[in-house]
Image (tube, rainbow, N blue to C red):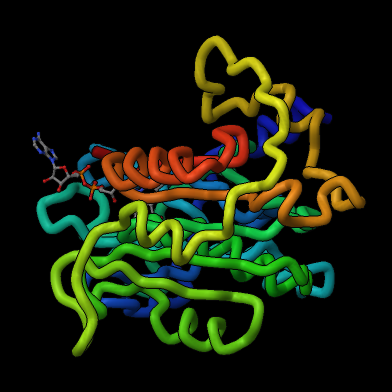
Length: 292
Ligand SMILES: Cc1cc2nc3c(=O)[nH]c(=O)nc-3n(C[C@H](O)[C@H](O)[C@H](O)COP(=O)(O)OP(=O)(O)OC[C@H]3O[C@@H](n4cnc5c(N)ncnc54)[C@H](O)[C@@H]3O)c2cc1C
């Protein structure tokens, strides 16, 4: 059974672009038809492989932006996967995905990958999300999944972007923040809206915008000897399953939030350090780096 699941994730699938949506001047969402998609969890990613006419191919990782298909989803919807790609102008793969690709185009994809940086729908803890740039993508999948299962735990998102025009999913985030329980805080590093200051995420912002750390941090478990590999999933992740939603996981102040941080390596390291300095247990923080 486990072997079959692993082999499904390792298999390259030919996928077809069915739609594209411009999110910002440099970021585009591509909607894919992935026949036989096995389903995914919010936070997982895929590998996209492009192959040129001369046979040269190149592959990159992309987070899944869409929520897992709900129980009531149609067969066609269960095969839909959305990626949001930020174009690196001098990059090899992203300029095609986030600019040239059109409905009807095909490429290869494998996944879903990752058992560590995932949010489980039964997790009753408050959810604290910190995004830098396109690091918002897997966190948006978590927000969408949280809403889809009507999880009532409060959610806070701290999102660092260069300017308001660089905010991916701006309209959807604004709409979601009007509906309790999402609290949205931006940190604009280059240009802020009128009257607001620019600045990077710092201790003052964490103190103001994040959930407080738990009053009684859980005991520290010995860290693994080496970081768990992204693939295949570590045995303990699947064995442990989703965090319990019973009374022990009922929320603050005893347990504190589940925290996910995603973005460029420098952003992730800074944000994780600030959270730990603020008193959040390292074990409650999960990180994903998109590159250097
Ligand atoms: C788990 C994971 C999930 C990710 N999810 C997303 C996502 O959801 N959305 C997203 O947009 N990105 C995501 N990424 C990043 C993505 O995988 C790519 O790294 C990104 O799209 C750039 O790929 P590229 O081929 O366009 O650029 P590359 O060709 O890889 O180049 C990247 C940058 O490096 C520079 N560079 C390249 N070669 C050299 C060189 N020889 N010397 C100096 N500089 C060089 C280029 O200037 C370019 O700006 C994710 C990464 C990981 C690890």
